[in-house]
Amino acid sequence: MGKLIKIESISQIHQMIGYAKPKHPLITFIESPKIPRSNKPVIDQPVISSLYSISLKNGHECKINYGRQPYDFQEGSLMFIAPGQIITPISESKNTDTAGWSLLFHPDLIRKGSLANKMKAYTFFSYDSHEALHVSEQERKTVSSIVKTIKKEYSQNLDIYSHELIISNLELLLNYCKRYYGRQFITRTNVNKDLIIKVEDFLQSYFDSHQLENQGLPNVKQCAEAMGYSPNYLSDLLKKETGKNTQEHIHFYLIEKAKTMLLGSEEPVYKIAQALGFEYQQHFSKLFKNKTGMSPVEYRN
Image (cartoon, rainbow, N blue to C red; front, side):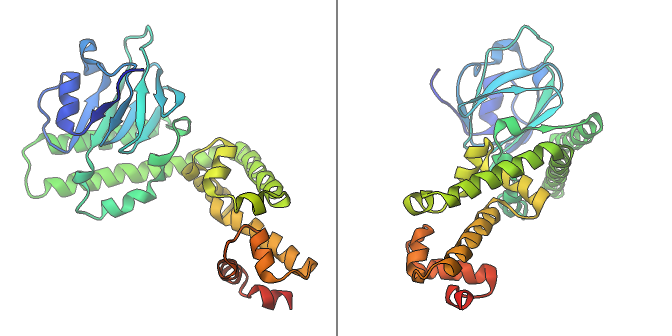
């Protein structure tokens, strides 16, 4: 593996791929077939970027490493990369007609507006690569149309309305992607139900063992890793299917375990709190009351 390449700006990536000077300093649209093959310097090189990236694969699949995991970027899929994530494009296949596009924008583009505060709601930027969004033909046309509108807007002479129109269309694009991820969760209902059972089994086993006292409460990351998903993707999926995210599932099993211990033993509350992985009794009591409406002592009595 080569030296880590850092991409800090739109201008830098244009220079790397042999594109002309960007029309806008903070956002650009790149079509894969238009990149000269001699100007693809990042193949087999790890890349970390300061940019947001939304990429659509239209033609043959291509391969990348996302973090440490290999990923086949398949036809009809969208991938979202947030600033600070590392990807490694792998040597290209024999197919040379690979099609697709990428919309890249710098965080400064949205920093002063309301969209900056909304970005955390677009959790798919934190999904693992194998959790890419697979779009239908109609969905592909919709997102591509919005992206072309954004490109048209930043490519013409900028005026006082340009920034607002670019941002509003970018937010529209992200909202459509959020909707399509919701659709993807729904269409995978049977798979999702199996996953819910696995989550419940994992938590039940954890709370029935000595792991609580030795390792403390399980966290969302532990649960997600045990399932083979990223924390955000697992929480979104569980929320869609059950109405509760991963943290709420953890708290449910914790409270059920606490109820059993409170009614099934005479151990003082501080001992039960310790056995449940809490360093301080007041933290346990606060969570218990928040979830049940009663303090541990009130519940026991």
